[in-house]
Amino acid sequence: MFTSRKRSLAKAAVGLALTLSAVAACSSDPSQGGGTPGAGSGSGNGALNVYLYQKPKLFSPLAPNNGPDQVVMSLVFDSLVAPDNDFKLQPRMAQELPQQSADGTTYTFKLRPGLKWSDGEPFTAQDVLFTYNLMANPKAGAASAGNYAGVEGVDALAAGTAQTASGFSAPDDNTFVIKTTKPDAGIVALIGATPILPKHILGSVAVDQVAKNAFFSKPTAGTGPYRFVSYQTDQYVELQANPEFRTPVGIPRVFLKPVTSDVATAQLGTGEMDVVQVSPTDLPTVGKMANVSVSAADSPGFTRIAVNQAQPRFADPRVRQALMYAIDRKKIVDSVLGGKGTVPATSFMGDVVPNSLNQYEYNPQKAKDLLAQAGWDSGKPVQLEWVPGQRDRDTTATIVQSQLQAVGVKVELKQVQASQLLESYTGGYDLAMFGGGTYTDPSQVPQIVGCDKFYPKGSNVPHFCDKTLDELTGKANATSDAAARQDLYRQAAARENEQAAYLWMYNPQTVWASNNRVQGFKASGDITRPFTGIENWHLN
Image (cartoon, rainbow, N blue to C red; front, side, top):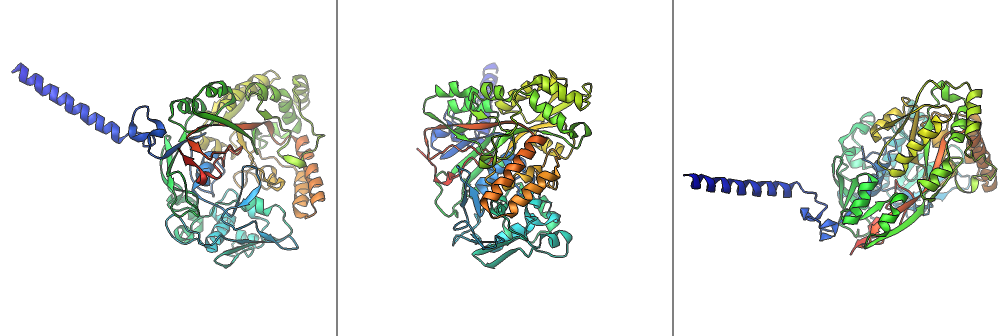
């Protein structure tokens, strides 16, 4: 009797073990060779595992910019033009950069022939027309609607007296035209990279309901090199090669994984991750890894701290200037970034930045003096919010806290999720640290400092407003004279620098490490479009 029961229990245990094993196999990470321990992505399943620096939220160009969302969208959707790794505009779905009329108000795009959506439907200029009218229509709630204000007829669209903007037209299936109300040298850089949406899926949805459509949680059609498969919340975004893409895509599957930078680096070493943006502090460790190559690229963006100027205590420029003087930004670049970065003094970049700008070099005594002049209340604490997980920002937050407290600004640190940070941008924050940029043209800077671009209408998170700056950038964008335009933007950069629109922390050099089995990878400085040309990558 005892022996029989013992055998029955043994059989049951074996059966339970087999069942648990089967369950484990079914629930295993599909990116890791069917769950084979230690197999990593090199186990022959044709998948590329890539680090995603934060958790994505929504895959919609209508939503406010959110870096990880943009990374996914850059692979699933495509646009007329887009910046390359050197931050120069290149044609994407357009055959070439647009033809510009002599008076600088009309831009004509010719589409590549034979384009298709990933679901097999033909792609035409009607899709472009639909998308641009949608993005420009305030009823759709696009965060970037203000970018389209210079287009002819957008005012009528906003007023509800027209269903479409007269400045957008599609004369035939392969032609799309933008007409502006006045010469607008930056319009192509400003709106040309808009992700195009499928009219055959969203065209029948009421304009004021489109943003809420389930399509943006699971986009079922795109024109990018990959098709969206699923987002396993907080684990990975799975993509498959788009068979309808205009050129063959070399890697069958991609998994984008939102983990912290230290975890990503560790997984690079075990073979669980193929491409990782690494912290400079991890370079000694990465340098010892076999079959891993390291490359770097200058970033077109910068890490900044927005100071909420909707609050009266931050409205005085002397307070913002004091905060700049209180932070040793050069030391942050040297110690936190290992010297792989620069310290900016304006949101403008490139040739329009004059050498005469105030660099706000570390001077805590000057910070104290300015705070005293502005009547700063040192008894009232200030919260600094940021999304954790990137080692440079995590470390920078603690340094900023210490250095601001040393001049009489009591700082409390608050780690938040990306969605929480976006919500707080509407006004419910004190200081917020985040990254951004990608300015291929100086005409894009007003999107983050313009008086009419307050978040969520635009990307002016700190609610900074300076009429003089607006006047300078408006004149610059309206002139086609290159020399005059550059001079006006230089004046604008000087004005923004004086007013301390943001706390400009650092412009990091983006460092990437990739498994040598990934062929064709090229480092990009733009962390929101880091995989330009991924369709040409291959796996050994």
